[in-house]
Image 1 (cartoon, rainbow, N blue to C red):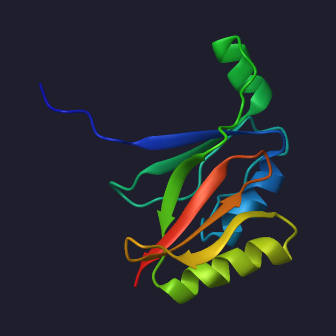
Image 2: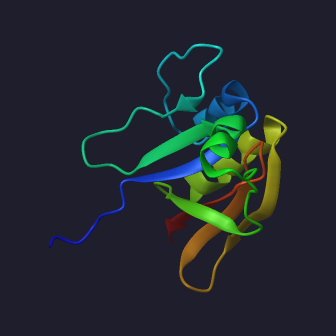
Length: 129
């Protein structure tokens, strides 16, 4: 049997339009979507891991439990350069979103930062030095 491969990561959202604006700051592109949409995915290329954003009520109706964002980073985004990490953090801050950990030069050889999406999911941003 072939090994499974990671295909998608999911976060939940109180407001898909607000979440789409946040993730757009990090470089994601979204198709047009209806105001009453319950599920949203950015445009991805063949074989790329997908980000799925589901409306909180939808996920609660499926699982029977209200979604709770983690208190640690749930996924990491590789940026093109250390300067791109700094620029993404600056864009997030300027748009009024939360910067959890300012960019720093990590001992493992990467520029690293952590931001939080509008619902509290933490996203790591990194680039090799």
